[in-house]
Image 1 (cartoon, rainbow, N blue to C red):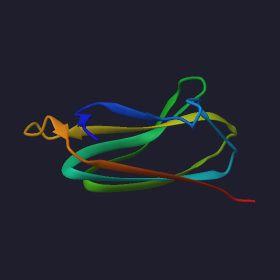
Image 2: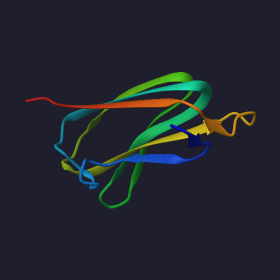
Image 3: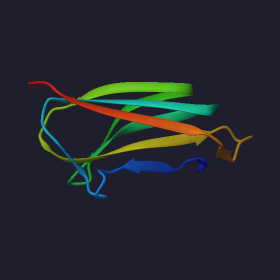
Length: 101
């Protein structure tokens, strides 16, 4: 994939809707990039309120966080690439969700 620097990538379910997430669900994001980048990750709830859960620099990024309240959410990853690069030539994002019973 090719991603413009400064672009926010949002993640929805397979129907293009926000994910319904039960309270207590742990979400893990892993991001691997071909160039060192600043990355921010988090979620946006159904009211449009954004919560940033991670900020870091490098080529490999990982964060885990727990959604406390049940509801609809979308997740985002934002990349800021060094000025010498206009685009990422490779980016891989993995997201996992675990509900504890």
